[in-house]
Structures are given as C-alpha cells and as structure tokens.
Length: 135
Image 1 (tube, rainbow, N blue to C red):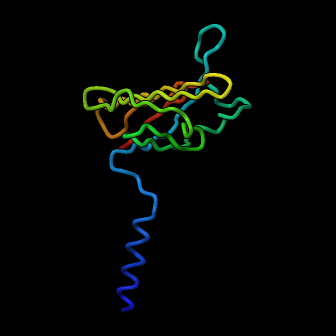
Image 2 (tube, rainbow, N blue to C red; image 1 turned 90 degrees about the horizontal axis):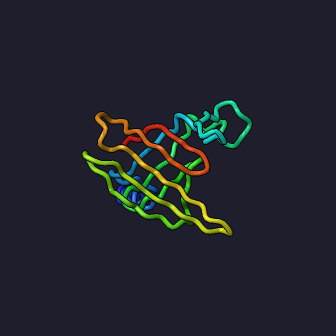
C-alpha cells in the first residue's frame, strides 16, 4: 500500500508540474540595442536602464501559441498571432499587439532554418533584443 501511495503522489506531481512541450523554444539574450535619432543601432550594454542586465537572461516561447515568458520578455495579456510556425526552410514568426491607451507591438523571429542546435532570434519591441534559442 505504501508503494502504491508513493506511486500515486509521484504521478500527480508529474501531472501538475509545469512542463515545456518538445516544440517550445528556450532563448537566451546575448544583446540589446536601440535605434538612435541618427538611424544607427546602439548597444545598451553598460547604460543605466532596465535592460542593462538583460544579457544572459532567458525566456521561453510556446511555439504553438506564440506566448513568451521571462524576465525581460513577455506578451501575457497581449493579442498574439503566430504568423509562421517555421520549419527547416524558414523562420518562426510571432506578432504581438497591445492597446493600453497607446498601441504597442512586438515582433519575434527565430531562424529555425539555420544549421546547428542554436537558432538566432531577434525581438523587435521598444528595443531590439537578440540572441539564440534552442528546442
């Protein structure tokens, strides 16, 4: 009976634990940049702003729904549209929109067609975040 109870508790733990689907992406930010008034991209590393510590931060992307969650990246509560599921020939693309007195947008592209385990990404929002994702 004791072994049965342990088995049941273990099974319930697995069922209620948050898990990532095999198709989810785990992404790591390697840099952040912003567009200057001159039209140049300027790295934000070392500046006194929210993204100063973004390098090395991670986030998860649920590929089926396009939902992103992490310290610097989130589209919870946004209208999320997966534009392209991506493949070995093309990039995965997500557009997120939010209206909260003003229109905000985010565009994520992960280049799944690139060789190797690490797939480059960029997230265009108020700033540009970039790095790599793995499946």
